[in-house]
Length: 79
Image (cartoon, rainbow, N blue to C red; front, top):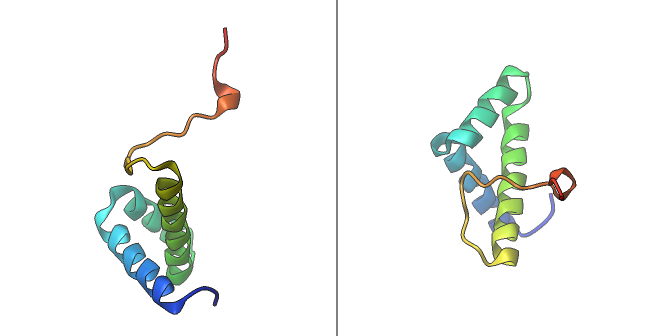
């Protein structure tokens, strides 16, 4: 285990919450359970996803957008 224990606990609680209340994370969780993955492993993956989202929001200074779609610059049509 790495990192401050208080932060790890908060991320775990946040993962439990989004697993229940966020439709995208709920679908992700159920899909991984159907694949036979360990529930704690799936929650850890959700924690990592949340941490990436938190860092992106802090670094960009923009508010979180639930249905945000990243645009891959390699797929943009340039005229």
